[in-house]
Length: 531
Image 1 (cartoon, rainbow, N blue to C red):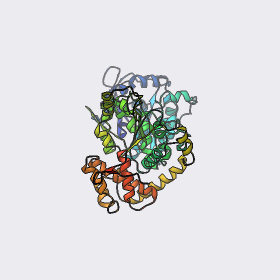
Image 2 (image 1 turned 90 degrees about the horizontal axis):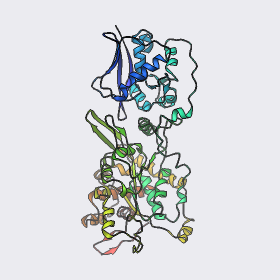
Image 3 (image 1 turned 60 degrees about the vertical axis):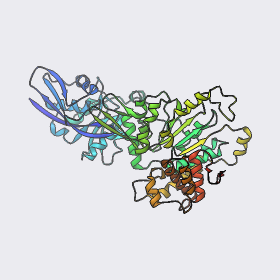
Image 4 (image 1 turned 135 degrees about the vertical axis):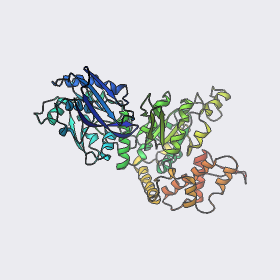
């Protein structure tokens, strides 16, 4: 009877927990069992590991084999335990020496032929083990670049179990064929478009929508949520897709965090494991709640809102999404994370994203002007509008109507359009001002600062807020909406290089918040747009 121990990592959400994989041989008839709360995928490792060892020209122990995963109370899931289990079994059978595997964390899935396969979740697993003090890692070769993103990590990439055993036994390294691209791609599950499909898009391509372009710039500067409404063909989708082109690159910490989420989801590009640009996620309106928020039968997986972390989540045809899907956005919009509870525990996924909603004025999309071409009845239009609930609308900072433009308007606007590069430079400067202003706080963007702190520490200039208070008293905006007006006014001031929002900034911010020019009931006259 003998035992051996290796190390692996269990992932719950994007949080990794170090796991001791202990193999015990002896005590009964030949069998193979795994204990320690394994899920179905992990239980299937028994067949994968046995076939991989046998096909690596190594004799399988003809004894009772028990694999213990400690801590036993922690749920464990995934195929990345395969290599650790195989090594533990062979060390317990004296094929490998325990000292040759001490201090090494083994991560990766095995094929039945012993081939090491691309495995998702390697980045957060290596990060967790490194934080626990481990520096040596064994991963499949396609995951090497991902694992080496962790500073000071010593990573050995293997193509097969045969290669790993040769290294551990200090034998001659066997030749293994290199990975083909299709061999890697079949184990990924698609890549969220941010640098691929959206590459080459430019804000200058959207002509005739000067006000909407300005709203997009303000949203990019302060990290504000947007709602575009208007008939089909007005440019709502074009505007939303160009928002990422205005955002600055992710810093090192955010790049690592976003890459870890995509690694767990299996959407991390193997050839570019570090995501440096803000992601853009645009799920279809038929997507389920689990697809948007995240979930799973036992161990939850990240959904679209987490894949859009530090980027943009675009919901086109927003009223067509199921109401329960839209309502689940409330928590992440307020707290920047989503908590998915299951019977065996809860998983937390970060979800700090910019939400962009787009909607038609009615199901047919033709209720424009007098609506003479609209075929929808008033009750149908009302029900359509109500599919976006008040609490969701109240969490949107900017409401902008995107009307269809004529050819004359497009031609006239061509001389004033600016490229994404020019606008992005202004956005970057505005964000630098915010980072400097909030340098001693947990926040970095105007949209993140709680309203009561903004009013107390960074108010607008005196005499700027009475109109906002009047709109609050008249029921045009809520208290939350008033806070968002102040945040927007700071973004406008930052874009203009001012040290404090002026009355004009507050006026424009209120117009952006309401989606129309505010009405001052004290004078019963419209207040014209300023700026």
